[in-house]
Length: 517
Image (spheres, one colour):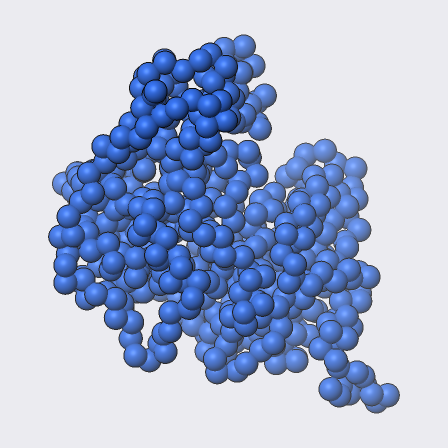
């Protein structure tokens, strides 16, 4: 009989296992880098482009998060084993910690949230797959209150998300919450910390090329660095001593990012990741499980729509004739999207039409020139970008939330954490290679508004027939089909979309051109 020895980060198989079992472990706990053919070491024949997460030559070790894979393979080959858990469960050194949301929130814990909390405490680690609008941050906040253990680090990807998470934790927990990132270094027993600052503290300021840690070209890692070696050392020590860690938008963290941050906390018994899309398009989904463990729950948008928690989206797929005789992705994107006057004028027309119907609208772009053009040619709208201060961005979002403006343009900064229940519609004008972002972008419109009830959300996605962009559209369609409650409407084209929206809303035109419902 072999033994599986479990530790917080790495575990290992002790004892002899047959060669065919080793081969199965090696194959199952590996993934191939999709862009490997461009890597110099692969071109030179020094590497086959495969990341192997089972290391026979290192004591038959593997990441603890992959334990379920290892057990399944051993059982399949009839290899008898026993498990020795050497992890040390930390004491509850914050016994007074309580979860008390403000009374004016009207908070009521939902059944799926209770289910998630119970499973998280039971499993001690894992992935919380919860769609946008499921209340993931509140669930994790209550989870921290049940664990009652510090130091605990709540990792986020942007400074905006840092402030939002800090606000929620501070409102709901009877303990000061630290904030680390964007030049701030306020360390407490429970902390919200940006991944960028954590990476810099772990590696040292001079050893980091932050671009190596981005998920894709749309990542907006624009925060200030922490000044002072004493502060860097304090952050590094806090990370090393952490007993519990949570990484928000876990799918978004590049493999290198997740590995370095998770391995920097060897004493973290409690390990969780949160995401609305528990997979990655570059094939390394297995790394997410390696870092956190198996999925604890999978709360899809359709489930919450059926329960009445979220509203149903009606998604118009609008074809744009953008075939061009170009081969460079950058040139194709620039001509077909960024500087496509016909497309951008239609976006403006559609947004203005939605505003005329008293519906709020979010226009999502990837590049500044496109957003600048739309902003210049629209009245009463704001363009929220990384060029603005965090305070200014928050003020603009509040204007949309309060109804002071009906339309806002935003870059990928709005993909995560934009909580605007008043939002009625979204125009996905920017396209983009990361199809997994589409769930988050649609999710911006699905939250219910307690002050002004809505029964549907309107989403417009522009599909292009140009090289590269056509494949992106196919990816998006495949994603949307995974949510049975997403109503997909095939639009006739740019010139028809406003009439199609009217038809959806039951609006008919009178002979004199006025509208009636």
